[in-house]
Image (tube, rainbow, N blue to C red; front, top):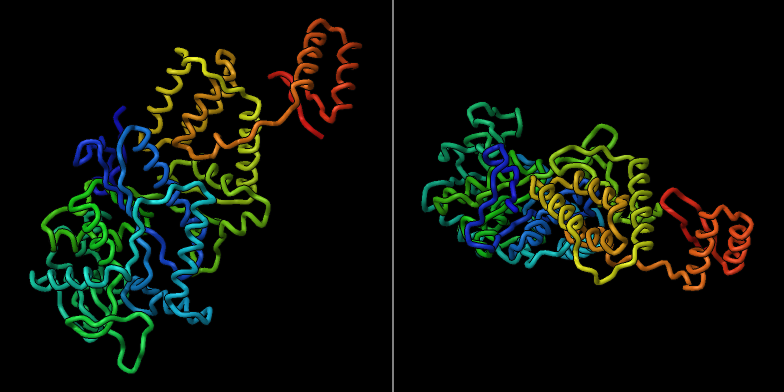
Length: 461
C-alpha cells in the first residue's frame, strides 16, 4: 500500500518515497521541559505516534529521534525575554537542571499513559553544546552570521527562499508585524544562534564559546541533533503548526546554509487543539494536563480516542462533554472486546477486505476518523465471526494504539454462560416461564442478563 502524506513544504499530499529502501529517519520536535505539557501539546505527539505506527504497519524500519529542549527557548519568538528554563527554576525555587529532569520525567509519564511509543533516541539540547558551537562556526565561516551586543545572529537575507515552508515572503515582514526588533538585528526575521550572558548576570546554564560566554539559540539544537543521528537530508520532520513560521523555517535556513541541502524531505504538522474558541497555551494559563484528566476520572486513552476521531490537520475544539463522549465510546469498545472470543481460525475473505480498507484509510494521510468508523463497522458486522472481529480489531490497534489487546476478558464463569445460552434458546421458543426461571438462577450466581438487538449481554453486579 502506498503512503500519501501532506508535505507542508510543497503544501500538498505526496507519495512517500523514503531516501533509503525500507528505512525511515523520523525527527519530531519534543517538549521544552520548563513546565508540564498540556493536552494541546500532547495532541501533536499522538499524531506523530500514529505516523510512526503507520510506517511500521507498512513494513518500514523507523529510526525515531526526539529532542528535549532544556536550554535556549526564550519566552519571546523575537529572541528576547527570559530563557524558559531559568524562568521555571525561579518559579519553583529549584535549579534549571532540576526543573529539566522533573518535567522530562513528567513528559515521559504522560506519553506512556497515552500509549505513545518512545523514540529510539532522546536527544537533550545540553548534551550537544559543542556540536551547536561547531555549526555556528561553520555558518560564520560561510558568511551567514553577524555579531551584535546581544549575541550571534543568522542573516536571513542570505537565503533567497527564506520562509518557503510557511509561504510568507520575507519582504512582506516588517518589524512589529510578527516579531519585535532586537537592537542590532539587521532584519526582522534574523534569529539568534548564540546568546551572550548579560553583564553582571550569572546564568545557571551557560558555556564558553569563541564569541563569549552564553547559550545556544533554540533553533540550532534540532539541526545539529537531527543531522548527527539521521543524516542530511533525512526523511520526515514533524511538529505542531506553530513551528512552521519560525522554528522549522529557521531550521531549514541553517541546514541549507551549512550543508547546501534540504534538512528533511517531508515536513508534517499537526493542528491546534482549541479551548473555548482559543488556542491552549501555557503563556495564557489556560492549560489542561493529563494528570487533571485522570483526577476527573478519565482514562488518558479516552483523550487519545478523541484525537483520533479528528484528522491531525483539522482543528479540534476540546470540551469536557466531548471527552466524556470519547470515554463512553472507549468503554463501549472495551466491553465489545471482552465479548469477542479469539480463536486460531484462518482469515476469511471478509477479514481481508476490512484489512485492505483500513490500510487504504491510514495510508491516505493518516485518516484516523475513517479508521475509527471502520472499526465500529467491524464490531457491528453480521458476516464476521467473533474470532474474525477480534483479529481485525487487534490488527487495527497496531496503529490506533488504544490498548485493545490488553483488555481483560470478563471472567464470566462457564456455568453462567451455559445458562445464558439455554435461556436464549427458550426465549426464541417464546417459553417465557423457563426464560424467567433461568434469569433468576443466573441472578443467584451474581450476574444479570440484558437482552439487546445484538444478543444477550452478561454483567456482574
